[in-house]
Length: 456
Ligand SMILES: [Fe+2]
Ligand SMILES: [Fe+2]
Image (cartoon, rainbow, N blue to C red; front, side):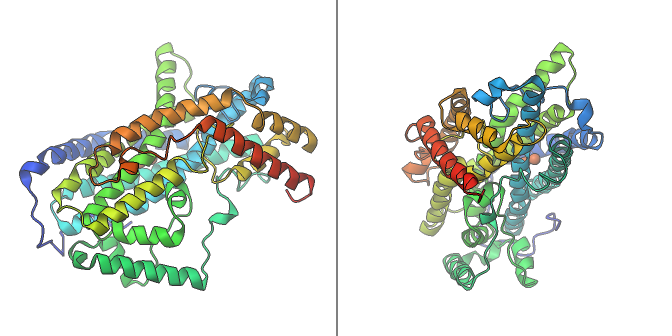
């Protein structure tokens, strides 16, 4: 990783910080950095990962039962106690696989944007905090992947599911066609034209990549992969790495990932505390979630302070910057928070890129030694789970409502946003339970006919 703490070589001659206005957020960043640097949550996660062994944790729930795969469905109700625990463990694995993918995005964009703050100058503590967060994300990803892998192998066997649960479809690979290269150059030209007087603050991270003739990193998974296809994501990367306002705005978007994660991890942390209070055994994954929740609370504070306050240090955004910021929030509403419309049956939060991938995973899962079903039995139970109303939709709706009010509170404060973005109108339009139910039936029908036709 390129170190971000360096004396700025392109100090901005156009911008002077207005100390009176910036005092408060500077103080919060100082306190956050100090508390984060002095905490030992990441070390605890590393220790738990190192000693993780599935068999010592297999007899326990890792979170409240409602955070289980297929919870609330008829299949869940008919499952044995061992199967129920396995569904609870698999949900932990799936959700954290998704978290790990989103944290790869964080690693990239922390460096892209810190490069801007470094070039502007005067934000050394923030840059240190971002560097610390980046190094923590490496450890988090490692722990999620290692615990997830050991669990998958123990529950499902090595061969059958070696690459599944990643929550991605084959569609996510980047096509390097002539058209996409042309599109890349056109979007890059637009961004450079519109930001041409911003050379003073362009990110060192991006400049170094350009010097080496390397492409900008373009994640195809996690929140970044859902947010935009590769060409468009590169365009946003260039913008986030070339303007102080847009670099700050990136943190408003990062807050979305923080809040989605919080909606899953806060109940896990509560579960940890409940067990601790009762003096009961705490499984290693439960403890990992608890310490991760604590590490991430520092990251959420950073997103909040940079996205909501620090952008005011800089000159008011140009019409172009406002446009880019608004398109980004619009896309985030549609593709990151509420993608596919409606809610998922069988997952308290959406973790898969598309429902057909999720169906295919469940279909295979039901035929493993864990459930011992034939293909016909698997389809029979899947129809009961995906084509009939059940409690699972209500649970998904409860999680959805939790973060909708959180997002509305956050984005309402950003006065440069269009009303559709400030009020987060896209994330709670219509009846999400009914929409989720309809989309579930449609996907199941398509999946079932592809299996019975021998293409599944
Ligand atoms: Fe993390
Ligand atoms: Fe984080």
